[in-house]
Length: 235
Ligand SMILES: [Zn+2]
View (cartoon, rainbow, N blue to C red):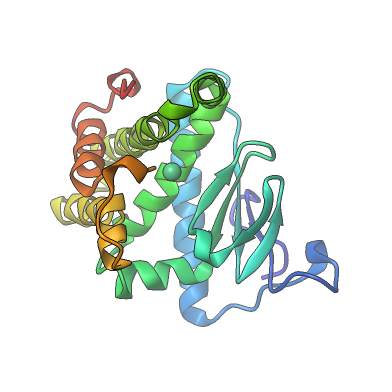
């Protein structure tokens, strides 16, 4: 498991920061995690092949799987942050423990739930390549009061992009109705309202940055049903 698996677009990083050269660190994986890594690599390849067809000029993102913490072009990534995409290095970062949490804490098990999380992050990569992310950042800087609202719209668009990929996998016969339910359940599980409620802090829509469970489900569903990247106008 040193360095690269799959098509070469998945890297295994992390294993602790400080001391030791990260690039040469190997991430020790359990057999279950190896199975997960294989599956995630497969999904990543499928996602990127789909976007290469949908989006002229698409270039691949790299996925970095890590444990605990890792360096990224956007600063130190930590498990607590959940999966994230960094536009500066065009890499998606997912802590291996996130998938176990998705199952145990958020009650969203299943292959497609795992795939949806990666598809959402690749949605952010698409937003970077198409200039949407820059545009949102400029609008947020020009009008700080709109920051959260714009963030929610950007996140919901990434959910819709995840759905667009889901549509393509369904067209190719790789998706059954249970998968769709799993993905929708995962989208609902990680809505801001649900996470805030779980955190025991009450629900504060004005501080949402990703959208409510209902919104996330709606936009994932829109992508899934239309398969059209142009149906994603959350702005
Ligand atoms: Zn996101």
